[in-house]
Image 1 (tube, one colour):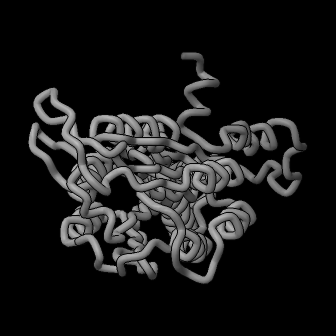
Image 2 (tube, one colour):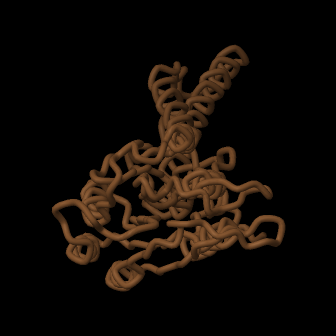
Image 3 (tube, rainbow, N blue to C red):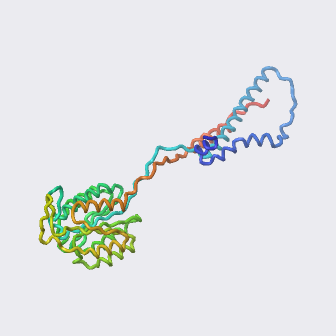
Length: 332
């Protein structure tokens, strides 16, 4: 590393160091003071010579203090800096709102989990809980809807609290019907209060909009205008349950899902539509959403610069004051 690079790494304004020789140059280049002409010289004995030498030494010490004060002032003006300990920037993620259908149809046992038949909501909970484990750095909220829509968990970085609220959810908690439009409208309202430019809704439902005051397509337009991206998931079996390789018919489990409306919602907000007919497909969908909405990782570690100019500035002040009060001695 060159001398210039070293100076630039130690000082913010290294150019001020060029002012160090200015007093010496001024003394060399400016004409001498005529008042300091030759004086009458008389013979001096050894005692007077000793006193003269003592006075000259004191004057030299005072002059040294002045030079030191000037040098310290130049160093302070150059702003010496010290590199601090490495600091990792905080992780910044998305505002991610999970909208989960809790209508009565989510209790249909047409899914399998671990080789055992389970209802749709149980399967969805298992997959969403695993999804939450991978969203470190996001602020996550949980919205549930049936006949009405409710924010079960506000936007928070505490994923464990969201997971606990998810575990306590039961089908029919918000009513037996499905208000997709109201759910999306409430999601947009809650995300509009957030400052992050990355605001995403993942809406999972197994039915058709049968309740609520807001039409789903109109809610999608509101989301688009608010800059909220919506991924929609149509979740439900095809009227049978696969168990140990056998397809068992499930009466009433093949209810229609309004895929057309869900596709429209995703398309108008810049999101994606997904169709999941079993737990494995649902897990793959949330893995795909992980890829589409990656968590922002921390940037490279940085070392902050700590200002150290107060130290040479204080030392320069001390040297200057000491030079003023320093005994000058007797002139030779």
